[in-house]
Amino acid sequence: MPESKSRRRPTKGPAVTPSSKAQKPNAPWFLPVMVTLMLVGLFWIITYYISDGRFPIPDINNWNIGIGFGIALAGFMMTTRWRS
Image (cartoon, rainbow, N blue to C red; front, side, top):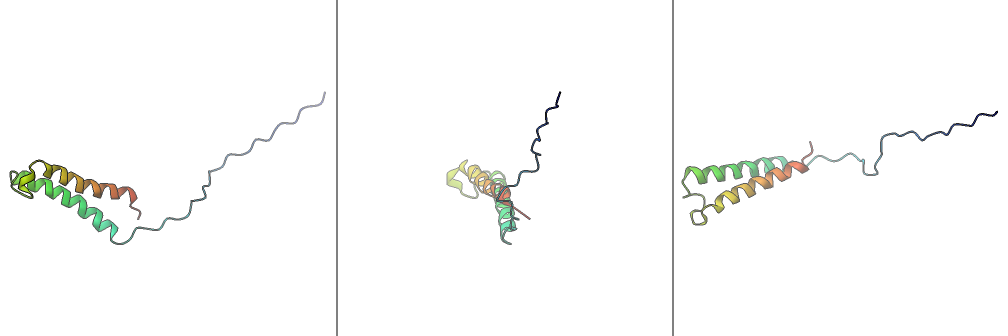
């Protein structure tokens, strides 16, 4: 009786995407701005706590914490786009 031929399965290699081009590094200003935003946000919050609410903006009370976290968050969001 004749033997059946086995089917050839396609080999699975690494997926090649069309956008696999080498990405350019960030602009020279990107890293200093990112770190500065994180530090300014941190110092904003520290200043608010140390001064007992008198600085940086006394009339907005606890919104100073939100502003500090917002500034720091902008810096941390930049870290997701950072390439060396």
